[in-house]
Image 1 (cartoon, helix red, strand yellow):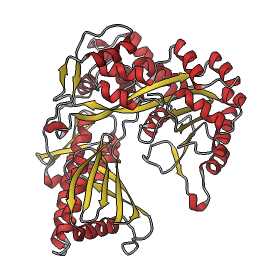
Image 2 (tube, rainbow, N blue to C red; image 1 turned 90 degrees about the horizontal axis):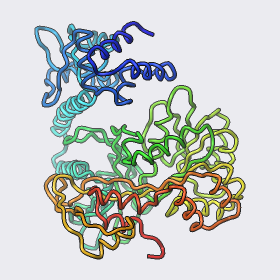
Image 3 (spheres, rainbow, N blue to C red; image 1 turned 180 degrees about the horizontal axis):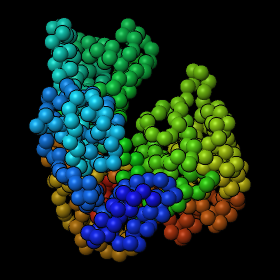
Length: 551
């Protein structure tokens, strides 16, 4: 082991931050996967990043500072290209005494310091800073560059186009600021209606004139690479935009369909900067997280994530892949389309026009020596059959299916024509999920529920409820909606011997649910009710998200 690494461990022990047993555990893991000691100590919960950086500062005689509230010097933004800073995760703070102060997170990354020194022409003085603060600082840095560029572009724009350009920029900017996932531009008889989808619900935002409508649609078509003259056929386009307000990079997918009143356009907004694909970020209870971790660490078998469109299934798959993503595994995905690019994972998108479907893609992927295969969606019998057989031949296969519950995934596969003996051999787990709106933490208010709600809670808890719940109110932080963001609720079905026997005898969904519940499965409604009692969401949100065909 590197002497400096051992010295860091010794310093942390001397300062009473960790003990010898904790250091040994981290070093053992490091021997296995090669990750940095500091990163492991943080992930294991033995130290915080601030404690680690403070100790590193003492070890390497570097000051540790907070970047909160600091803004980039305009002179510096013209000095070093942003992509260089992002690649090396360093942040130039200021020029002082003919030296460039640069915030870094890893004092051993001498190559990054050298690159900045070569490009800037200044002698670099490194200082230590929190990784998250460096990322936020670089967002401000990017915003300064963008502001300069947009100012230059606007000076050259034709005066007649300026109002349209400003409106489109403002519209997208507002949608991003309000955390909208989609912008709907809907032609009506005498106007165009503009709506944002925020946390799964649509809200009307604007009404624009028919004349302005045509120019707005044309402008968006131009910047997204679509045919402006073609308004009788569906089209797809895309563009990438940085937000002046939040200074992040967004990928916007644009789709049009002909409507009797004009062209209907939807803009899907994806945050390209989002990288927190971890099981911890999904909001699963500890017990459920442990179950999923156990499933994804299996060497082979099939894991299905089920739920309706927009339930967060892709995010869960990405988090699961990220958990096992390391240099010892060949992970290949086939998606429609690729939503987020993930380092270290080979990603491919289907192309229906070229005859490259999910089933075709899996056949080709199997020739590329994969350890893990992620299939965006099982849509037909052919895809299901090939995916099942891949799981039976030593591959870990993950995919999604549109069913209302975890148990229903099994009956759906049978309905698709997959033999029960293949399902019971290949399937190792099913995760059903829904998204419910999260109450705004700034304005939610407590209340005593009425008897009807208490009766609903009694069905879940088995006893009378005498506490309080929370409900939405509305404030400036949540744009008066009362909700801010969404949280997932889960139902995890682990395939054990009991479930396998039920699959073999073609048991119905109810029998499977009953057996799984006895062995510890928490249903979607059960998980949702728990979050409502914790005042994370509301009872109404949970009941709406978990409605069954019988209700």
